[in-house]
Image (spheres, rainbow, N blue to C red):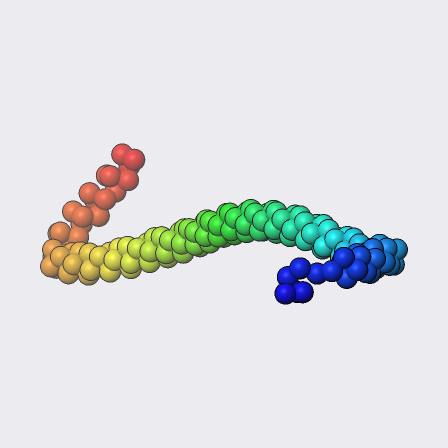
Length: 164
């Protein structure tokens, strides 16, 4: 039963031991414990602050990355527009050159055709005149077989020359 109802002496010495322990802990134990808890709290606060700074840096890095991506996309679009303009310009220049070359070829072909036509026409005239002279020669021979026809022809030609 002594455990449930302790003596006054036991309670007194327990109280004295408690007060001594309390004073020793208050003088040397709790300041160390409190200091270590404050250090730990400071470390935790610093970690939280570092985490916030890291988050801010990450957010800044993301926003900068997005800016760079947007700028790169803008430059890409500009380069593509320039390339399309250059493509159109090159195609237009090629068309103009091809058109000019085709015109030169057509002009050369026209000149060649005209020259060939004139040569053919000249050859045709020469052939026709040759045939005409041969026909006229044959007709004149037939008509000039007699001396009387020859004299009439000469008189007629002389009359025409005198009129002119």
